[in-house]
Image 1 (cartoon, helix red, strand yellow):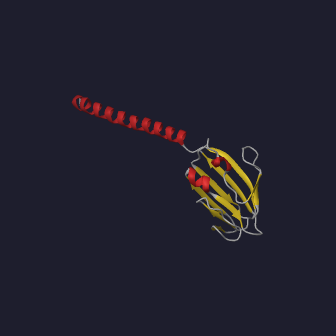
Image 2: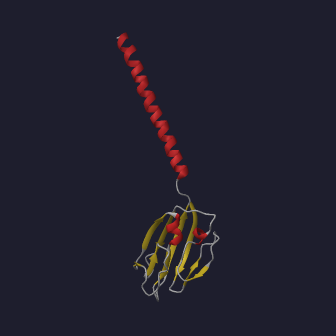
Image 3: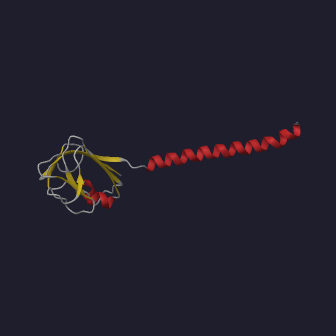
Length: 150
């Protein structure tokens, strides 16, 4: 019995050390991933029409109103880089148009369609966020929220 204990104890100790190392390394990795995860930086909320937009969120540097298609103002600034943009149109909204390529959508039908009854899109990559544009079709209103992540 004593011989078995001498042989088994070191094996069990090595297994214990391996599991402990895995758990600790896994925790360190999860901690690092959490620290590096995208962080919400700016929230926008307002209405987009065929002629312009209003932004009712107060805690950001972008203008409160604009003419033409909505865009992420902060992404146009050279001192900030964003990883993603979550853009949502609520279910009470009308129809609209958008482009991700930097082209200007038009109220008359130029651009990808946003159907009424809600819409959500996740834009990834700073250049795509910078180029994203949204406008409502003629006679429609898009009630939106937009969150920018760094």
